[in-house]
Amino acid sequence: MSSKLHIGILAAGKGSRMESTLPKVLHKLNGKSLIDYVLETASELKPQSTTLVVGFEKDLVKSHTKNYKVNYVSQDNQLGTGHAVLQMQNVLENQKGHLLILSGDVPNIKSASLFPIIRHHIKNNHSATVLTAIVSDSTGYGRIIRNINGDLLKIVEEKDCNNEQRNIKEINSGIFIFKISELFPQLKNIKSNNAQSEYYLTDVMELIGEKMSIHASIIGDSSEVLGINTVNQLSDLENKN
Image (cartoon, rainbow, N blue to C red; front, side, top):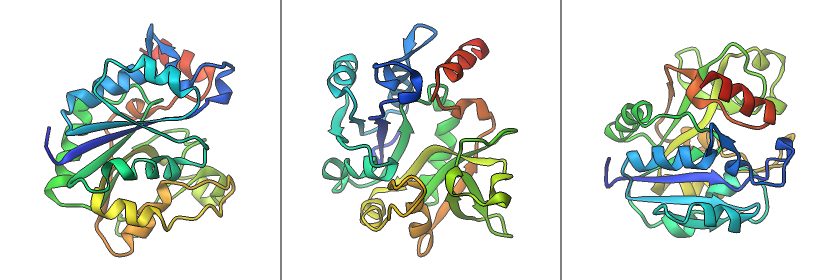
C-alpha cells in the first residue's frame, strides 16, 4: 500500500481459556489457523515490513509462519499489549512512517476495510488512530470514551470501567495505527496500575492525545473485529462464517 506503512501483529498469547496447550493463534477457523487469516490480510496491504510478536510456544508459531515474509520479536513475559508492542522497538524505532497493529486472534478483519482508515490516518498525519465498533453487547471489551464534541478522550478496559462506562456500546477493536516516531517514546511512559497489573497499549492513546492528533474510526461491520478468546467464541464464529 505504502512505503510509509509497517505492520505489527500480536501473537504471543497463551490463550488459557481455549482449553488447549496450543498457542491461541494456531487454533483453526474453518480449517485454517487464525494467524493465517491475519497474515494474509496484512500481505494484501503491501506494507514495507511485517513484525510478528511471539511468546507462548513461539517455536511452534515461527514454524507455522515460516513461509511468510515477517520479522520476529519475542515477548517472553506476558505483561500486556503495551509491553508486547514495545518489543518491536529495536526493529522499528528508526523507521519512518506509521505502524498498523493487528491482533493474531482477530481473523475476520478485511484489507478492504483497513485501506480507507489507513489512508485517512496517513493523509491527515495523525499521531494515532484506533479502529472502533458499535456492538450490542460490549462485555469483555475496552470502552471508547469521547468528549462532548465526539473526540476520543481515552479507552478504558472493562475491568477498570465504572458503572456508567460499562454501558457504552462503542468498543476498542484492538486495531491501531501509530506514527512510529511518536509511539515508542510514549510507550515507555505507560504504567501498570490497573486491575490486571498490565501495560495497556490503550493507555498510550491518552498520553499521545495530550499533545498530538488522535482519531477514532468506527468500522461499518463490527463482526470483522470479533476476537477469539474461548472455544465457544471460535465455534460461534465458524457458524457465522
